[in-house]
Image (tube, rainbow, N blue to C red; front, side, top):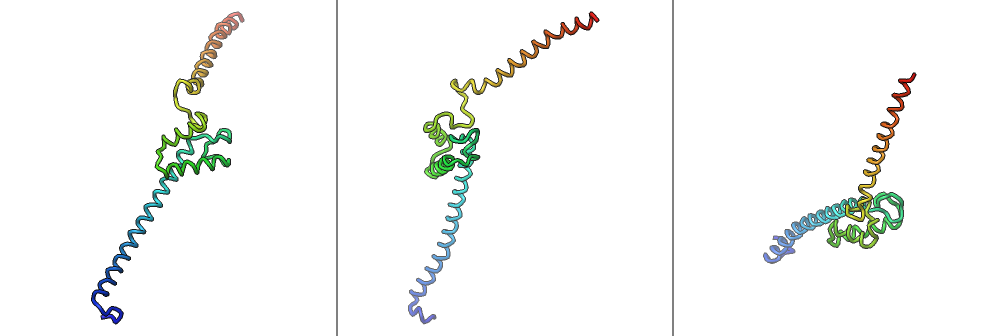
Length: 149
């Protein structure tokens, strides 16, 4: 028996504390590893959200692409909202309430934004219609000119 532990109770206490420290340390490391995985998850979610929001200062850039100071501030705010437990849709709604519908890089389809979504299609159809009309008008004139020669 070790002379430091004159009592068997002290020896038992020493071994119990040693086991607790060993297993407690591994539990602590596992918890620390899990929390860093959660941080990466928040970071990936923040990046995904910043890719669908427009930078209020930079022209035609998402928050993710922009290097403007307000873009950095908003990316940090997105991350902190994720840490507070907000969901993706809640964060997007918060940003829309604060900055208006213009903060969305692709606005939602609703009556006020219908022209944004259907305007290019309507212009394409009108352009094709005009082009076909002009081709039909010129083709009889071209046929008459070749017949008279």
